[in-house]
Amino acid sequence: MTIGINRLRVFVSDTNGKPVEDADVTVSSVLDHGGMLPLQGLPEGDSNGEYVFRVVWPMIGSWTIDVTANAGADTRAVTEQFNAYVYALPPEYDKPAGTYRAIRETSEEMAVNPDGELRGS
Image (tube, rainbow, N blue to C red; front, side, top):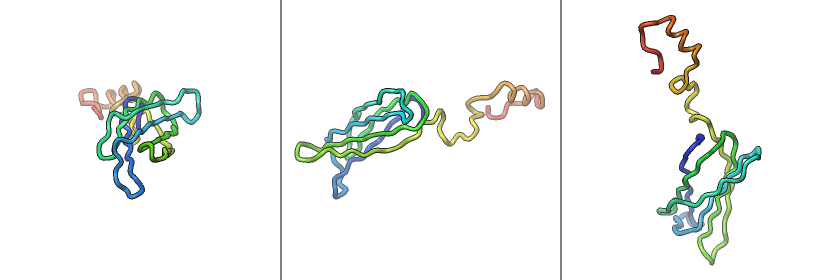
């Protein structure tokens, strides 16, 4: 997950593995080092046991996510806890040169190849 808008998908199933529709599902997440109020969310909809939440992560770091589901008056609510890390950029960017170029790096490349295209452009 990265800073900004993300989609969090939660799958709810019964003890037999069958999808549970129309459950009351909520998500609450808190930054592990504190200093922020918890983020709370309700699903945008459900389909075949899948509940999709729009989450806007405001900050990088380690987050704890609590997912609570209740399938109705005859059942008890179940809460599961997950840990997630929110990145500034997706983790597959091991060198974000295509996104950000230091002035020094660009100047050095232009000095070597003044008429050529910049790498990563």
